[in-house]
Image 1 (spheres, rainbow, N blue to C red):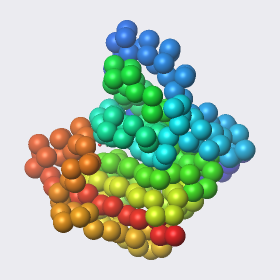
Image 2: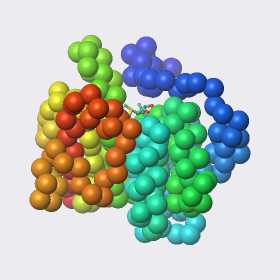
Image 3: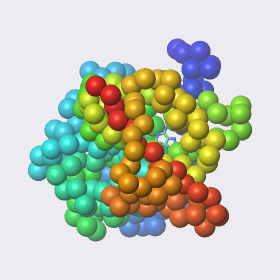
Length: 236
Ligand SMILES: C[S@@+](CC[C@H](N)C(=O)[O-])C[C@H]1O[C@@H](n2cnc3c(N)ncnc32)[C@H](O)[C@@H]1O
């Protein structure tokens, strides 16, 4: 059994449930989700999903991963625009999962799989170098200093991301909290496996055209906050 501080470290800090699901959403969670769920064992990679590209039929050329997809708007738009990519979305909040399931079933997409739990469990179970792109968009900022350690961008998670990402794979990050943006740039630089790269002719304040908006971006803009869009390359 782990030490208490390990247990705290492993806890998902955030809501898993919100308001009661509508009947149609509840049906999708009980009937569709099991067929889309990524098999992740309880202990280690030997019980995990193996090569995630094999989860998809028809076959896919690349596998992209979104961590904390919220209501799934970004993941859905990306999956629709990139039918030869397989998408794995991680989100422990069941109401968000239900929203994505509605979008996926209405559009009849075949290239989406879901890990409805802590992304860290999935990362630990994935084999090396199997992910071609990662999205971490508006992660919970945990602004109080004593909660900073809960931020998804931290040394342990960057180690796992560096391990599962293929050489030259991209990690996209967005946040409207300037202090979390500075924190991320600092962690990435110190880690060494990621290089911050320019996003074409635009600067970090402008969302590229192939980067669909999310609900949290809309909230940030409405409140007058300025989001930053960062792209990092997994250096080979
Ligand atoms: C602030 S919301 C942003 C949602 C979405 N990306 C957007 O931009 O609208 C952060 C999301 O990350 C999810 N989350 C937090 N910790 C997570 C973890 N360890 N693994 C996967 N998702 C997580 C939360 O449930 C929440 O939905």
